[in-house]
Image (spheres, rainbow, N blue to C red):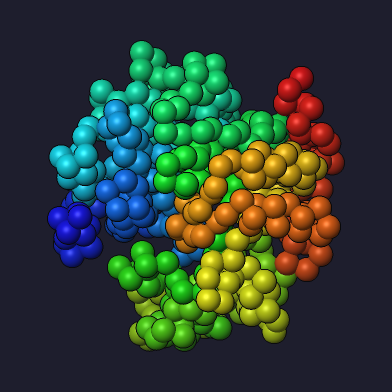
Length: 401
Ligand SMILES: [Fe+2]
């Protein structure tokens, strides 16, 4: 694995990190994407992470690679930059060719955007898609989206891939207005590893290792005002990370306000900050007392805190808690889960059948899809969508109808 670490971690070659298709989904860090590599289970499971976000609100997105008797299985493709492809070819040399590329989500744009490009890199691989793929504003055929018809299969309609090692479990489908939400998780029975996309996450207080390449997003958000310099200290990195977690969880956290343009300009364009890295001192956020307590509810102290992402709970499942509980029931019936790999935040994290049962109990007895405090912005978005008829009152029934 040292060769892969050298390829991705030690050599910073911008040419090899270019992603020309970034305008399709114009997210930070735009056209240049560095990749972080980790061996999850020696000689069996690996993960590759890249950053993705808006205005420095960036969190890692993960491609998981699993060794199977037929070859390598890629789950949740990432933009195949030259360096990522080189790393995958190194894995291929040792463990066999990429035989399957899996897109296990119907709605996760950040996961589906690079499926066609990854498919072109491995022209012999079979492609498996979660059913109900949709495009906006027009529903285009899969071949128009760059997925070759002759080697593309759909979960359940065409069977299930690699059942010799995996058990597949579907969450959804739900009607979310513009299209559908569905995620197909897989359980590697021998390695006792559950692989999910967005359904469950675990967040810890240390920023993801990927930020070692460039901590700028963390430092940018660790400040109180735009005229503060970006200071790289461990505390600032953690503080910035806590705020990134709040942003990506609630979009607009409760203890955050957006100042007037006049106030933003007062601290902008100061000497030392007239550069793109610090966005010329433009910093349109004011954090109020209490934001740290909000962050503590999402972030584990000494280990990742297992949770359902608030965006998922409040915007996708607000009226479908029972479907989430049904999914947890199905998971808890699997034979001995030991760890969880998800497509965002910390991975792998310790996760057992008991954690699954405990989470179900918490969901049954606790609040679901709140609209107070940090949840108020998400609540407002959902209520508006519901009022305008964009999302249905009962997503599960509408989808099956
Ligand atoms: Fe995602």
